[in-house]
Image 1: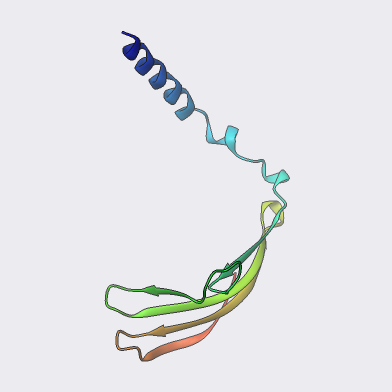
Image 2: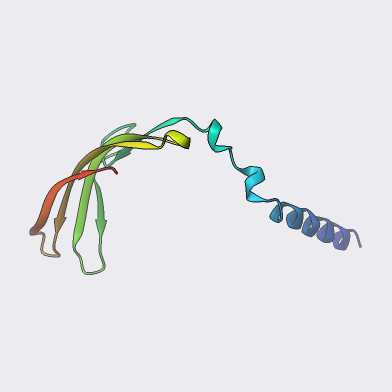
Length: 101
């Protein structure tokens, strides 16, 4: 009996949380003026770079770079880096620079 009551109580709590509107949990946009830094494939904090992603056909894309963005009403972004695309044999197909937009 206690287990049945506990199960019903737990279900009620989960249901109540699930129906809380997302806007009630979000930070108002006029309060979110933070600047965030990002780093892609650059050695920092003991991490190794660059970042490499492999496609099912064996081709790869290697990326590195960094920048920053501002959230909230002052939306802005700056930064960039380099990329290299190689086919499955390891031959370079394309390389260049990317810019955060």
